Image (cartoon, rainbow, N blue to C red):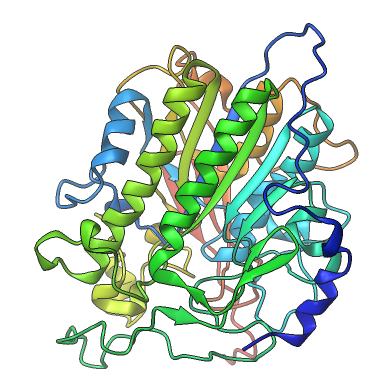
Length: 440
């Protein structure tokens, strides 16, 4: 089924090429100091405990665990929100949703996106001479000027929303997602029986829809191919590059993973976790082969796991939120409990980032923007306040402290979306919840 409104984005497509049509990989030949490359990989709904290096019960992340041993692991690293769009907007702007205008998720019917007066990380680096690419999930607007190609990304290959969000011209889902937890909390005997490998969500290459419905069972390998091709071509050109990879994993498994990723009939989430780990490993291997000593790779997640999905959700590790669970709520995604925003995070840069170091610095997804801009030798946009900080000194082992104070906005659990609900001050955390229409 085609999505009629998407024709708006096809204007002018006829003059585009087939592969990397908007990317200029040419090198001017000028002598200049070599700028570092950046690869930022953002997992979707991955729990802190889904990383084996964090949580010994997890056995499915061999490549990520290897990266942790070869770089720096952050155990007190936080998403800027506990749900998708606000966290991604914060990563690309260095600003909380109350400042950048994205306090809640965009729906399939949304006509807007990340406000056009916000400057993205890709736009800053593009102006600094970088070639920029986005592979994977966007979720910051798909209409007209909100599309990634108009937000600083020279190349885009991916899906506009989460992989369970159906067709973008239809409210709701074309196929039901995987079943949620039964009311009794008991896992289903066959959790894949209602899952689908094809949803009507479109797959884009730049402004063109190249597949619809997208086949989820082959999407991971397509992402691997496009990401490694981008790294290869950018490295060969001599131009510095930024590659942002918005993974479809983990979210909730919607289809059977490829046989090679599912040895021994492992449960769906575990198999999907291995598939994601393999994808990250392929990207890292390509970096090591082409630009190892001049590429900074940063891996993290957008928020905690989708706890309502029972065995199809990830692990928050020790951050179970016992008070909240006793009250009948979730300690994970959409909440400001620790499992909702404390996420895995790894930094890898041979010869620059110390090897096999565990950092307890209080850091955030918000810090990616100012850190990358500083390392690239670029300048922050003027006339605005940034909530993130330059974490370079922590990354290079020259400092131990990050934020002293870090705010966490409400992300849909209760109250007003985007309102600051929790504040972390060093080792302490306070919750502020304002009830409306209260009576004495």
